[in-house]
Length: 485
Image (cartoon, rainbow, N blue to C red; front, side, top):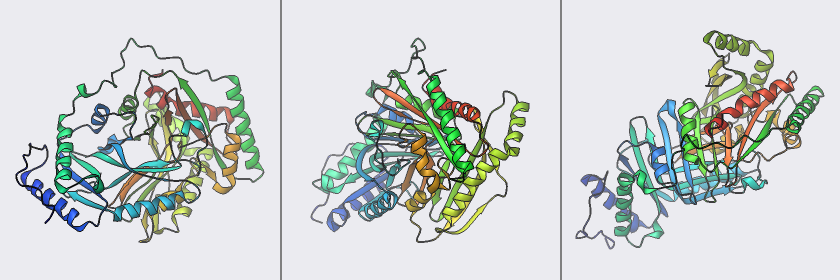
């Protein structure tokens, strides 16, 4: 082979790279350069157990793409950083455009793994805005569709941890240069320590949090008016349900970093999807959502109907009574049924079969409980996964029913751009596995402000004041993560 790795190169030991894996890696790289048929490559290796969030925090670069995903109850987490390739799209066909770009990049990428594992190889990380376009200044760092292949990625799957390095083959002059780059990156995984960064000092107890923004009477009156207007439209048959949201902004929060916020969330909300997407412009979208839009492996697709809410009780007896009230509430059952029906209708063109339980369950979180129906589908062989995600978004839990009738009234009745709030956020890989959640219970951290959002479903018998209190309840997770009382 003309580009063989020179046997006399002096090699320092590489963490996580056995002698056999080193031989296989050299052979794989040489074949890549001989064939010249691929543009990109990924290299995956098992590594020692590490908290992916701790690694992300120690390597944090505020001017680079950074990503985190975790559901603590599932013992599954992803940390990643630095952008190799970004896929972006806008407009009504953004999910189909993203699907086409993902498919093309899979074909252009070779994958090496020192161990057979479902989460080795190529991964796409990111999300989508609620609407097809993003117009508001605070969201300028986030395209309506954005999926990134990171340069490095760590996946924790139970007790097993795997690291993946992604490269553009054209960036290396020879097989030897690429081989030593991979070894260097593996060594970095074992040598990063907390002293490598000074940007994530813990908050000290003596530090005083700034006051919450004043939520004045004008905000309350606007909300009451919007809900009454929505109910008027429902009464006159415009739509059956619409989800309205509120937005609040917090200034001067520089004493806490995005990784500290997500750490607070994952500790408190272990049954939720905790996510963080940080743009190279320095803004961060993060949150802790209980709502799965879809998880998938090959053709098996799992989703949830999550709608209808009530607070948690202060005692076991009160909590049980509230649960019964939620399950028996005509308003909440009605709201929930719209979501179930819409999901089944939207899955039908893509699914060979759809199954669900007849009655909703109750999902209990730390501060709220929801009506919840898991739905299982077997997808047809020709179903594109991002197109399925696009078809499901937005569910009536965050949009309305029927959606096309409710859609124009959201922007009319809300006084802010939702951006990525309530949009799909998550990941997928080259093996047909992935997961997207609905980005509720979320916030946008910019250089000057933190923006938080919360919404609730409005149906014919909604009470505007009660819905205001429900949004206050839903704002608590993000406010408490920022260490507000």
